[in-house]
Image 1 (spheres, one colour):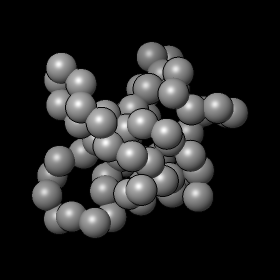
Image 2 (cartoon, one colour):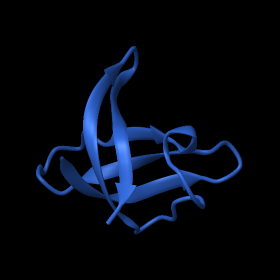
Image 3 (cartoon, rainbow, N blue to C red):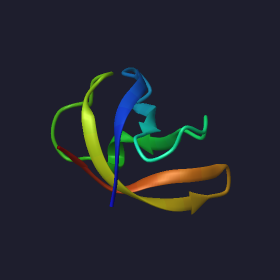
Image 4 (spheres, rainbow, N blue to C red):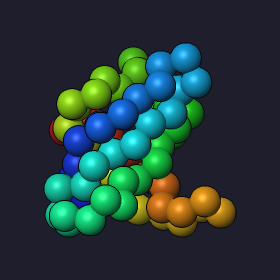
Length: 66
């Protein structure tokens, strides 16, 4: 699993992007709250996840709070 920090979250639309801890690239990973149990994630929150592929690029899978 990869770890990262929620860098952006749009609370009304329920999606955001995670900044990965294991790379300096600007390749943030998309996530949607439908894939996360519990309350909405907040910007700055630490998370752990697998990286899958969607039509638009990398997407977080098996997302959990650290």
